[in-house]
Amino acid sequence: MGSSGAMGGWMLLWVLLALVLGVTGGVVIARVVHTRHSARLPRVPPAESPAAQQAREALRLRYANGEISREDYLQGKVELED
Image 1 (cartoon, helix red, strand yellow):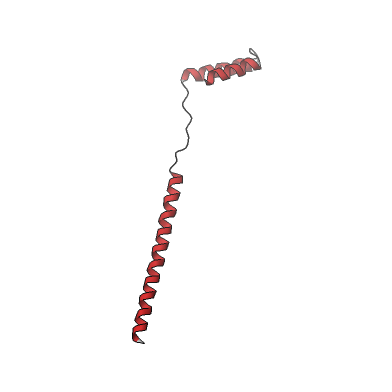
Image 2: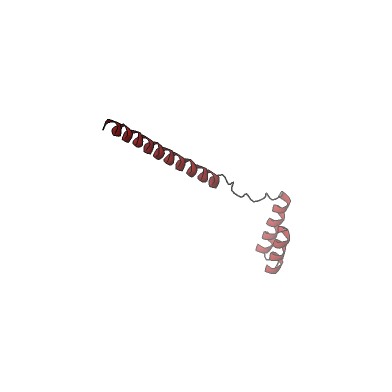
C-alpha cells in the first residue's frame, strides 16, 4: 500500500504540471494573437499640399457664392483629387 500512495502522488504531480503548462501555453498564444491584431497601424490619409488645400477652398467658395454650377464644382473636385 505504501508504494501505491507514492505512485498516486507522482501521478497527481504530473497532472498538475500538465495543467499548468496547458494554461500557460494558452495565455501565451492568446497574447500573441492579440498583439498581432493590435499591432496594425491605423491608416493615415496622405497629407495635402498647401496649394491643393487652397485650390479646394477656392473651389468651395466659388460654388458657395454661386459663381460656378454644381457640375463645374463636382468636375473641379474630381480634378483636384487626381
